[in-house]
Length: 158
Image 1 (cartoon, rainbow, N blue to C red):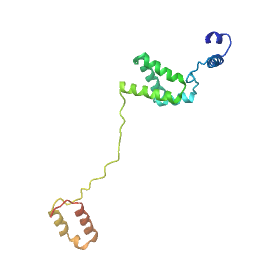
Image 2 (image 1 turned 120 degrees about the horizontal axis):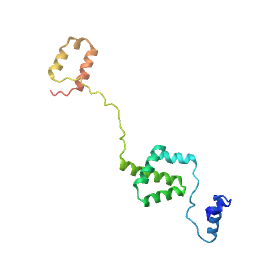
Image 3 (image 1 turned 180 degrees about the horizontal axis):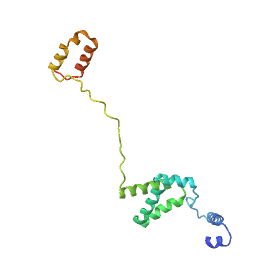
Image 4 (image 1 turned 90 degrees about the horizontal axis):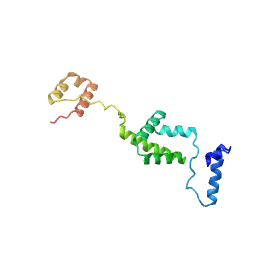
């Protein structure tokens, strides 16, 4: 009927609006208006939720070839609702199913470099004694301080 009226010169929006009004008068109402207009910006935002245009196209083609008709119908119903957030959620779920079926490239996680290990330690009491017998130990306070710090880092038992 809508097609016949649009061929007669009425706009599709006007025809649907008229029928919706008549249905409301008769007590037939829909929970939510379907087919709401979605802007190009919102469409781009939805596709970005899937990883971009190409990723969205891959996911939709995969779904068309893989999912049951019931799942496809459910997805189409959500898309037809016009609710951008619901569509994003449905696309996100579809993307998860796609990723689970096809695998994803792992994301490399890198951390900070480990702090350098202090290898400047005395490995034995003999090394400590040799350092203390050095003439600089008695005459040079900076050298003496280096020996003290090195001894603090060492794991020597007396």
